[in-house]
Image (cartoon, rainbow, N blue to C red; front, side, top):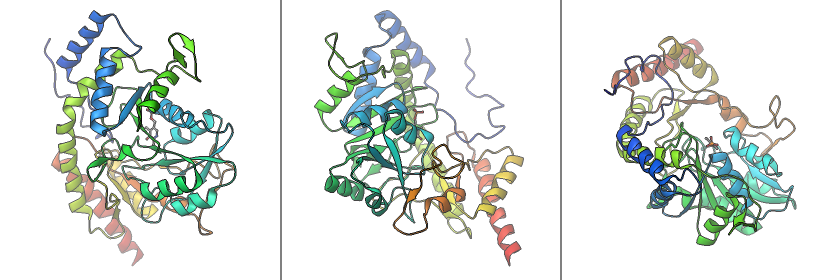
Amino acid sequence: MERHEVNPLENSPLVFGRPVLPQRELLIELLDEVLASRQLSNGGVMHNRLEDALAQWVGNHVCLTSSGTMALMLALRLGNLRPGGEIITSPLSFAASAQAIEWCGFKPVFADVEHNFPTLDSKAVEKAITPNTVAILGIHFMGIACDTSALEEVANRHKLWLVFDGAQTPDVMQGEHHLAQRGDATVLSLHATKLLNTAEGGAVVVKTAEHKERLKRMRNFGLAQGQIVDIGINGKLSEIHAALGLAVFPLLPEEMRARRNLREFYSSKLANVPGVRVLCPRPNSSASHLYFALAMPENIRQACVVDATKEGIMLRDSFNLLCGPGTFFESHNIFSPTQIAVAPAIAPTLLALPMHSNISEAAAGTITAIIENCSAKHLKGQA
Ligand SMILES: *Cc1c(COP(=O)(O)O)cnc(C)c1O
């Protein structure tokens, strides 16, 4: 059957995120291999191949899981933490990070983010530490790495387990090293919305073979040679999902190249727009291929979303705080080194632009023109 590479309707509307679809011929070849093996799960050929490929990418031990959320839960349980203990995390994240803490029976405690980066402020973390604190869960948010060294220093000094949620930074490097090498464990998501995807899936990255062996037991009901020897759950990734990941992997270099070009285009057009700040990576980190984010006054942001929607372009503007009034974690406040927390001020200013390989230069130009216009209109209104 003929394969249609391009769906003529795909560009209308221009979506915010677009999953990298697997190479069809390779996927079918791999699925045939799965069928021939008659092994559909429990660490078959595809699973182990993908685990090896990912381990090579991040330069550390990798344990595949059924989702990023499952990976978070396993990474937290790996620390042998006191049940009911407090885990300090960021109010700026996707729902999964705080839910994983809660689901494991720990208590999320929210500490403020830095002024210049939307990630945990180590001074705020230190302020939130109590005798009940057992761990820190740092979130690399919107493609921007946490201050990993500062958080490692605090965790070491207070003997706390340190996990990083790297779901939004699958590709970020610190110099020669992948960001996922930091902390006691780093969690990746292989969800369809992320860069490398298995439709649903995740991974825990750890530093020792012992930790990997323990995770392998935990994700498989705590079993070893058929006996329960550890706390466990079913957190495995199937052969079908792993095959998907293997058929996406070869496409990543080209996808990343297209996204790098798009980032450069956005950056060059928006670097000097009044009121608009491009969220830059930390000086020691590479830029993400998953997000391109801006910060701007709330009214400019709203105008951008309205004007983009009229053009059939989806921007992402809902970065709600995880805690505080009107949220599920309503009674949880934000620990801040000063009286006024930074996170509630930053959240309503964030805007993420479409980031994938199916955006023409004309479409990218329309997007940056909308932002320039909204900035100009607003600032003129102010004068
Ligand atoms: C996507 C995401 C997750 C969860 O991943 P799933 O694979 O969907 O469970 C966790 N944390 C953050 C910050 C994410 O963006």
